[in-house]
Length: 394
Image (cartoon, rainbow, N blue to C red; front, top):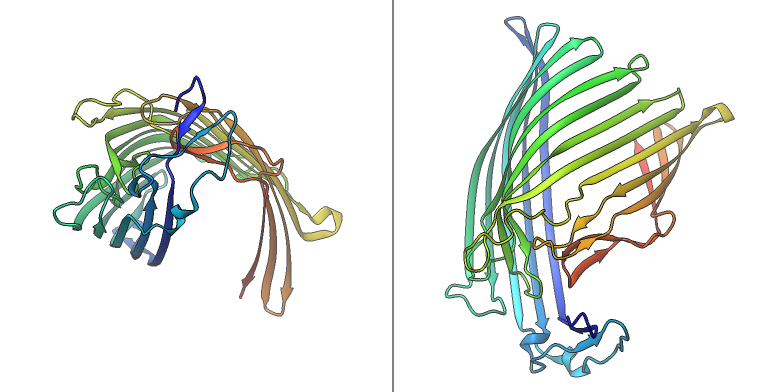
């Protein structure tokens, strides 16, 4: 874009996209005692299967070789030739993902003050991709990627006082096979993570109010982000480190009034990166869309004292600070605040409990930017939105 004149070279495409996703999980929990130790055991498995199929019409791949410009200060719409809509697809992409995992976790009570947690997860993921990216045809357009990962986790908690506990934990994570392909047609691999955390948990008001303060160090490896203006093409950040604190408070201030509050501070840094020439690229920059400050406050009230014990109402606010709009840190998304509200009513029909819920998101209809991938790919927040639901409990 020419920032002096406001002329923007637009990237346009038409997409016919279809997807099918299936997911299932099975958990078994139980308590047992061995050699005087109390175990809370969790054994589970899950399965995920997804198919993505799309046909794209890329403006740059048709006989309209040049993108059609528009002036952001004085835009004129409707200048794309109608013949563009009759052009055949220029790009296709299909991906089949299958991913299953098994996990075991044991929470052990060691006397009155100590608790230990031991667990692991095993993942097996496979992605089959048929792709013809617009940058050229790969030698073999069908790519099969397989990945397996063993991820341990463990932690230790100490009740120094009946209302105060100190804890520490370590966990590894597996994010599955990254979507898309890199610019040279090679697969982007899988995302991995390691997290260290230490913190304190406390109770107050006779156990009705709980809070926690955590210090964390999270490292994510091999993170794929879309390349602006290139369909299904991603670039990979070698390593991103997020360090910070999280504060959470929740509980009942009275018999009818509940409160949930949270705050986080994140120091985000791209510690390993590579540009097109294999250099350091964006190393040392903040990772995109990672706010330094974020928080929320939600309160809910039951109208029992007013004679409506089954009526509840809640209101809350969410705050997100300034974020980097891309990994180059070339521009920033401004921070924002958003207000939400909710109303609910419950009644009984025979042995069943029915709850009707009505939510209003972005109550004040504020305009804000939610996320960004580049200067040309910024997602605005949704306007005022109304949601309704009915839940039946048997």
